[in-house]
Length: 456
Image: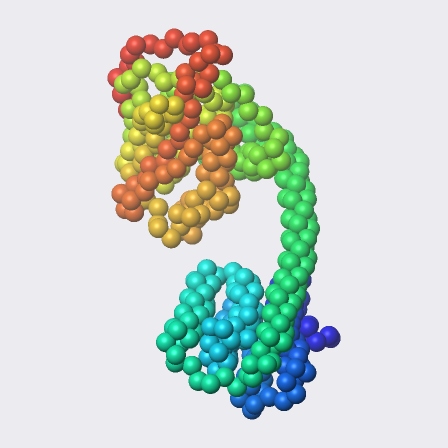
């Protein structure tokens, strides 16, 4: 193990990215100690001997970065080590400058080292705090110089020019050296990140291809099971008993549920591999909302949930969307509104303009709402809200698919929820008139539509 690797915390040695980062920080800190040592040799060359106070300051300047590196190795906390080194360096240089001429001291350029170290901070709060300390030190030195608070300098005037040159060269060299180390190590980290990203993308593509293939393979026998179950149910020559019909019903129900899960997995894999084709066209809201309500009506009636179509009271809106995809989005939202609702509750679909170019379709339920600590997971794949109670089935893909399909159609999706009172999910889609008024023929819409329909 080389010297630099020894300063890396043992806990990150097996993580190439973090190990490279820690090595870069260790190199920068040890470079500060090295440059401080060279500056000590330069001072000795120019002056021959130094007072004990100056030896002590040089020793502190050399030891502080090493102590910071050791602190990082012991704790694994890079910020702690850098803050300690930076604060120590600022205080050392401030004392040195105060004892050797204040704002015109030969030690003042060494503040450049602290500026270089400041640039390695990734934490804004730490950067601002240490920057404020550096500013305070500089202001204090200026005031001490201007108001005559300084003691007599122990550096002879004849040695000042040579020591100033040594100080400036050392500080500039340190800034360049630290910058080269940081840039090189960051380049290595970026290369590894790119490699990891490429591997992750390949893995994701392979997973999506596998899921697509397996989903197709699962769909074939599931469809056959449903067809055979229906043949058994409708066989008049050999009628089934009530118990057998009930069993066939359970088989069909579970097969349909499994087929729905497989279809969702297939849809998600097609979205991830960009295989889903979107055909944008003018779509009337009455051509999608009423059919979707009809599809979920059976499940809603089992729980005594009323389905209310508030969009039916106004003239039909025409949106710019894919007819099949927007229908799938609304079905997902309506299915969730029924699934997560209370028995005897309501699900209300309403439409309203969202600005001049979008239509917002809202699906409101009277369920239990969404817990605040789960809301950041709503649109994540496989996030099964409600699954912890065991009462809600599903793969947790409905909202994730709805979000991606909506975005494919250049729309927006969002929600509002009050815990204990219910949730409202909404989809905003471009209005056809605003999007394609010059390229699409105008679609006639009836002036009025039937009164609000309540589906029970």
